[in-house]
Image (cartoon, rainbow, N blue to C red; front, side):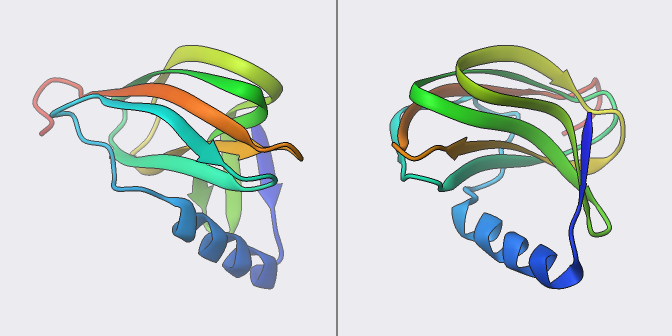
Length: 129
């Protein structure tokens, strides 16, 4: 797990950049499958969901060029990344939320950009809509 504390001004800028890259929140009704999503050089793409402790996200992706991948949440002005991988072309797993928070899966392209194929499935704990 990595923790990134940023000064307030930088955090506001980062939030604005991230907000511009975010898509609609994931929901449990249907998996999200995306093919050939272009991420420009040094740009970020992310998918987010509001989770409760015990919810899981089943994820897998492939990129035609190396990317950095993180699953993170914000705690005040701190970005906490329970999953963080650099310079990878593919990765998969099942992430389990440990607390009620908004979690985001984030891909960051390098100097050559990247095309992403990914599939995300939100798995709610019993009784959660």
